[in-house]
Length: 154
Image 1 (tube, rainbow, N blue to C red):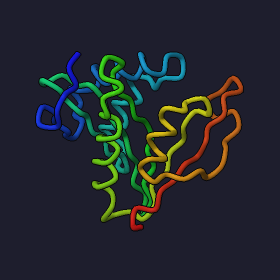
Image 2: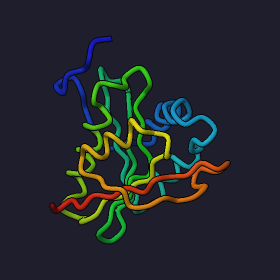
Image 3: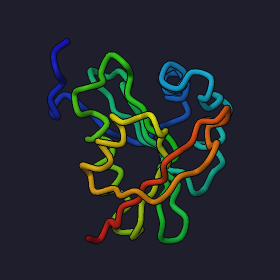
């Protein structure tokens, strides 16, 4: 596959009709610990704190990110790129978009990442995220999460 250029990509707000495609990426990315499709519908329809974006290539959804904005802090709730499009910097592009989106509203952005997901940790570190601690058994069955955060005004 040829690496998509930024001109071929489109980032926009997620809509209800995007949920089935997003859920497919979620399920393929996170398997047993994936969100349910109903959780995505709830986030889009009812959660006043939720802001979800998708990234498209040739009008196909290839990734997404979810953010909660509560007062002056942003929490990345979920982010994934379709397996066929990983390694092209799309996750980093989506994260930068989200960081820019919340920068005027929030000072801090945080997230949780699996202890063994070193690829994602590397991406987050490159974007200025710092280690903030560990959440024991966050993902269940003994899987811990690392909490990372970034000051968006530095």
